[in-house]
Length: 248
Image (cartoon, rainbow, N blue to C red; front, side, top):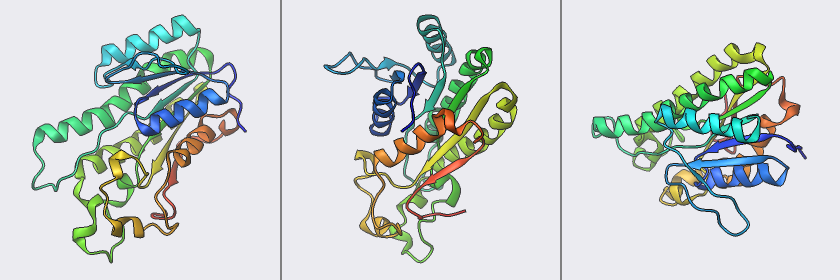
C-alpha cells in the first residue's frame, strides 16, 4: 500500500465520481487533500469542503495553488480530474460546445499544471497525474465490427480531441520537468461506471474484453500508483485502464 503521509495534494474535479474516489483514496493513505470543483461545496460530516474552482480561469487556479502553498507549506501532488463530456458528430457540433469541452479538459489541465510547477520545483519534488481517455487514443473506435449506430464513443469528437491533447501535453511536460524531480503521467480510462456513462449502449459495454465496465476504484488505484514515491522513475506514461478495450 502506498504511503502518502505528509504529502499535500490538489484534486480538480473533486466533486465528480472519479474525483471523489481519488480524493478519498489519497486521504485514506495519509495525504492532505484539497478537492476543488466548479461548484464547490461546504464541509460535510466526515469530509472536508470542496473548494470552488473554475479551472479555465488562470487567476483562480493560480490563487488557489498559492493559498495551498501558503497554508500547507507545500504542494506535492496534482491530479487533474476536472472534465466535461460532449456527444455529437463533427457535422452537428457548434463552436460554443467545442470551446467549452476544450477549455475545461485541455486548457484547464494545462493551467493547473502550469500553476504547480513553481511550488514543485522549489522542493525538487512533484507528481502530476492527468486524466486522459481511451477516446483520446482510438478515435472513438470501440470495436470496428460494431454497428456504427452503437459506437457512441465515435460521436464525441471534441471530447476525444481534448483528451488526445492531454496525452500529448503530458509527454511534453514530462520531458520538460524531469530534471526538476517532477513526474508527469496520465491515466486513460475506458468506460467507467458513473452517472455520466449510464446511458452507454449495451453493445458498447459488450465491446470490453474484460466483460465489465470499469469502476472509479480502478481509476483511483492507477492514480495512486503514479502519484506515489515508488513511481519516481515513471514519467510521460499514459496508463490505460480499459479492460483491454484498447491496447497500444
